[in-house]
Length: 91
Image 1 (cartoon, one colour):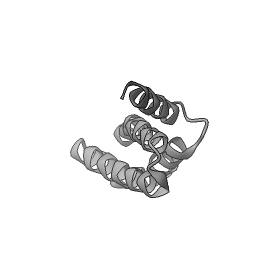
Image 2 (cartoon, one colour; image 1 turned 90 degrees about the horizontal axis):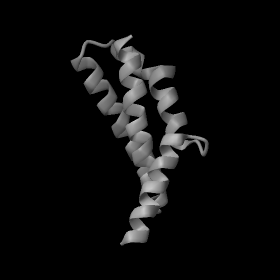
Image 3 (tube, one colour; image 1 turned 45 degrees about the vertical axis):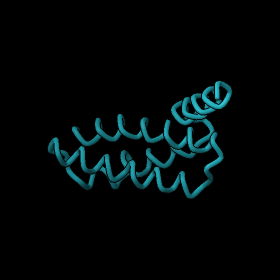
Image 4 (cartoon, one colour; image 1 turned 135 degrees about the horizontal axis):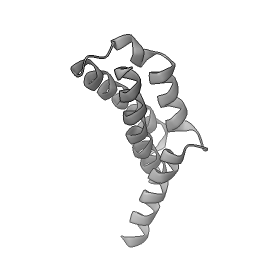
């Protein structure tokens, strides 16, 4: 249960970052890197609080992380895109 909670929280942060990178035109390699680093941080945090590592490599971890970071329907990715666009307009 701990692992599921960590996955649910950290994937949202990672999706905001991928949305920001996408809006700044950083490309697919940046998205892939952010997803990989996000997964790494999910695992590290989860292990630190006693979660089972295999939780992060299943649907709640990798599955939801990839879907949330790459879907055009993701609210968190959209939030990252909007943050970047707002930042660009103010620059």
